[in-house]
Length: 352
Ligand code: GLY
Image (tube, rainbow, N blue to C red; front, side, top):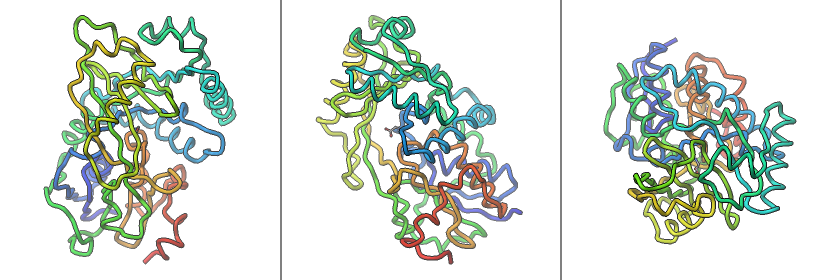
């Protein structure tokens, strides 16, 4: 089955859906007034569903693991190289963090995925730039990171035959297309008011390694300082440091407090970070659902939603493209069942 498709939103989700649909034979128009300026442009690009596993969050772990497994083939289907790290290492600075790492390793192990607990000496050997007082580490060799901007560029290059329209869509009914996919990220609720997707602001810093500075980690380094999550994600020329988390509507200004916390927390993990050049700070809006799972599914005969990816948009891009491709064929992808919007049916009302 194929016909005309309108994709609303040109972040990584919208672009990947459009590329896949065009390859499947759909005639695709993608609408975005500011292509490449949303959350996808700001993202750290960590693929860390295992390291972020937590007892009780089975569905999020399974969905993330299914998408992680799809990433190598998805990357091969795009031009260029989009990967930017050699795995992920979550570190513990105190006894409580160390206990959390053991909890994660046990839970994730019970779900059939292996993570390796590392002691101080092993951490120092793998990542010598990290702080000497790190007590324990959790190594996930399969959790690579993606250069979000290289990914955006690769998807745009792969969007052969996709007509990009630099206009905002305000009314889905006005779109002249057989099928519509709403992949509008934090703007989703402006088009689908009943959709429980809210904006959660995140600030990041981009740092460049100066010639005199110590070497950068080759893995994504994740940790927690004063209860705030912090990560350092390798890039060709340095690191992305993220991310703050606030519920402040659609505000995308970078605050002094946000930058201060990110630098202070990053320095606890990697003391030499002060030698790097700070060349960019930015904020993006994560599209967050109430249960932390994305919302991917059919809302009516003509409308499909692919949103609510929260902190995991880059990770969940391949499985979302597959799930939407299946929906457009009148099918469903079993691995993405947990993302079905019918779980919010009392809010959304029955499918029209
Ligand atoms: N992707 C990680 C974050 O949103 O902070």
